[in-house]
Each structure stands twice: as structure tokens, then as C-alpha cells.
Image (cartoon, rainbow, N blue to C red; front, top):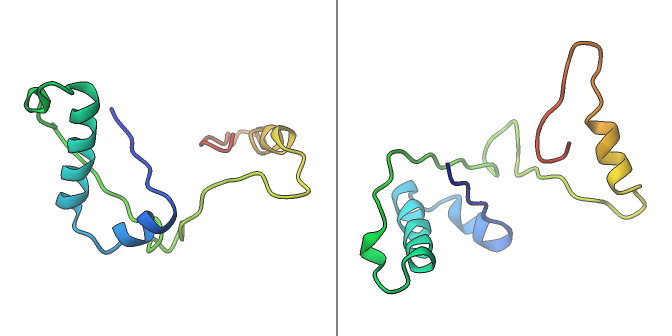
Amino acid sequence: MLISLIAGEAAKSAETEGSESIVKSACATLASICFPNDPSKMPPLKQSIVTRWQSDPYARGSYSYVAVGSKGSRDYDELGKPEGRVLFAGEHT
């Protein structure tokens, strides 16, 4: 499984770009890194999924970051603590 994250202005632009175009671009970049002498050796994908966090009403482009005045990793540790039988997971924990 490979995951690619697009951030900043590129992420805003990708919101309106077709999924096929995004996947093709990501694969071309990966092929040039893994097979610099012959990118055609890149095996085909079995599946791809493109999410659109900016337009997702439940995410709205969210991604965690350490804010000014926060306690850094201690805040992340606090977010990762279980609440009863509920466990939290994600890049922020």
C-alpha cells in the first residue's frame, strides 16, 4: 500500500483535477524514483483511491499540526489516550 499526501496550493488545485490524472502523475513520479533508468518497469496498480479532504464535509481539509502555545508531543499523547472503551487512532496519535 502506498499513500501520497498533497498539501498547500497543490492540494487546492488537486480538488478539481480528475482522479485519473492525479494517479497518473503520482505513478510517474514514483516510477522515476524507483526505476530511474527505465520507468516503464513500474508494475501496474491494482487499485487507487483519491480522497478530497477539502470538499469532504466531515474533514474540510483537516490535518493536525502543533500550534503556537501547544505542548507539542504531550498534546498528541493526550489525544491518543483511550476514553473508556473508545480508542483513538490516526496520524495525530
